[in-house]
Length: 96
Image 1: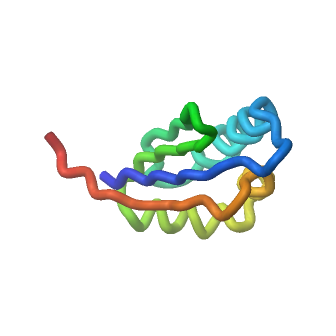
Image 2: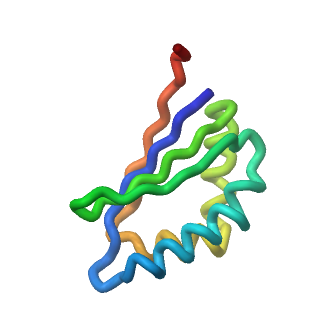
């Protein structure tokens, strides 16, 4: 299993409610339709950093979804609210 993290901050003036609505659209209209996607959740820290954690069956599944996201309207709408490109990392689950 692969654990993907994406961290980002919002552009100035972007309301949390707008991000939550667009993130929900990404979840239901895009993420849940990607092969190998096991779970996805979004969180926000007290200092304003956002975190999306997605569990994938394989790294190839995560990479394929990232390629598809580039052309997806919901993903594009979310990226438009983000200050800079999200920092995405992949980790291999070691079990236990």
